[in-house]
Every structure is written in structure tokens, then in C-alpha cells.
Image (cartoon, rainbow, N blue to C red; front, top):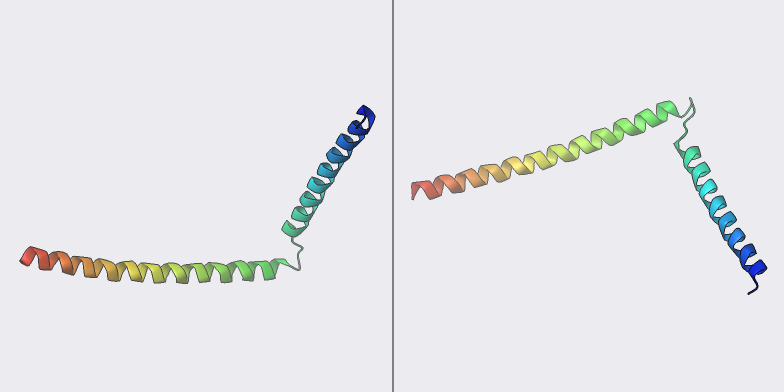
Amino acid sequence: MKEGNMMSYEMYEDFKETMVETIKTELSAKNNQSTDTDLPQLIHSEHKHSREAIAQLAGRLESIEQSNIKTKAGIDRLQAS
């Protein structure tokens, strides 16, 4: 390729990268913006997500507690023998 053609190709690639980044930034900003009408729905969604996370954590804590009870029982049996 001639030097002039290479420069045009490099300019095209720079332009393309700039456009892709601009579009990604615009889409990200659009997706992160919430209007006043979206706010109650957003709050409800976040609240629901929090409740689900708490329920999962409670289940894990219950499982850990059961495991601790079994471990303590095993230790007690070992100490008794």
C-alpha cells in the first residue's frame, strides 16, 4: 500500500474505534438513566432483588448451622471415646 492509503486506513480505524466507544458510552448512559416514572419500578425491582438475596443467605446460614451441629456432635463423640 502507498503511504497515503495507509494513512487513510489508520484514520478510518481511529474513527471506527471512536464511534464504537461513543456508541457504547451513549448506550450505557441511556441504560443507566432512569426517569421519574421508572423510579417506583426500579425501587420495587431492587427491593425484590434484595429480598431474594436475603432469602438465599438465610438458606446458606441454615445449612452452615446444620453443618456446625453435625461437626460438634462428631467432636463430642470423639472426645467421649
